[in-house]
Amino acid sequence: MKILFVLGNPRKSGYTQSVAGHVLEGMRDVGAEVDVLDLASVDISACVGCYSCWLATPGQCVHRDDMGGILERLYACDLLFLATPVYYYAMSSLLKTFLERTLPLTSPGITMTPLGVTRNHTRDPERWHGKALAYLAVSALEGGRNLNGVQETFRLTANGLAMELRGELLRPESYLLEFSLAKPRTIGTITAALRSAGRELGAGQAVTAETARDVASSLSPGLEHFVKYSAYYWENAVALGSHATDLASVQSRTARDVRILMSEMARCADRTATARLNLDILFSFTDIGWQCTLHVDHGTCECREGAPAAAPALTITTTTTTWAALFTGGLDVRQAVLQREIVLAGDRSLFLRFHRLFPPPTD
Ligand SMILES: Cc1cc2nc3c(=O)[nH]c(=O)nc-3n(C[C@H](O)[C@H](O)[C@H](O)COP(=O)(O)O)c2cc1C
Image (cartoon, rainbow, N blue to C red; front, side):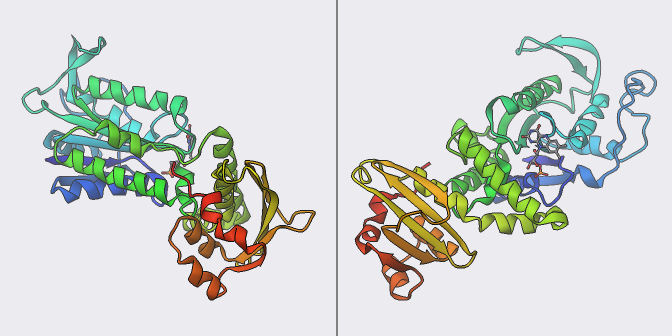
């Protein structure tokens, strides 16, 4: 299986690069022969629409740049994989420019396709047949309508280039991929699904509906949370000022942000287990010097910044990493208390019931 793996992202430290990286690993797992083309490091001029490649010099563009050699790489592949960030509800201009320059692969003449729309003839059906296309689009906003444009464009592009569409990978909420403290399970599902998609494509199969669904798993349980969680990401970025262009710094600061963890904890409070409680639990995170209160009120729970007005039923003093490990089930709680990694003051019996009161998120 020969794959031309095209990266259409200008930002090399960004999410398209890292998300596409998992797909690439999966393809290599199954021994696919992958030719990686980074569009940010080649010279491809914009199509000028002169139709010389159809009329004056059939199959040849007027531009003398890297695209000539790339057309040969296109002819050589069985699968074309296109990865792009979503820019203004569409693919990046790098990828668009690349696609426009595939015009020499086509020729005059119109064919009606099974999709019920027309396409031009392919120039060399002997060399251009049985090819497939798959794509990955990575966006900051949530899925659904935001991604309709990019999805439709890729579907029509596959049809227009007479290629079978073999995989549609949509990865919305890119920035929330940083919240590994609060969302390790979902992030694990997404990462594994991206690799599976690579394996499926690398083995010459279509991406299954289940894999595509897992790739697109939502990291926020609703619009309200998405808006709040995105705001946390951008607060971290803004706080870094001019250093924020170094994405790694933003990522490490965001990954340690405990606010999402606490907000998820409040969201997942068990209604039945907390039905009879009306109390405050104060958390003091010593590593970041930040306090918050879980306000439990007969089956509902809310996370509020700072200490409560009245004395809390329980005060928990700890670090963000210790607490994240506890919340996601990866900590020996007894040991942590004995070693004073978690210090309790007040009603300790409440703490003993924590796993029932605040089970980790299952979504
Ligand atoms: C010029 C520009 C336009 C963008 N437009 C959109 C958009 O329409 N929808 C969206 O969800 N994200 C949009 N984004 C955010 C990117 O999709 C986001 O940064 C994502 O992580 C992919 O880019 P990356 O690979 O550089 O991280 C835009 C980003 C830029 C720089």
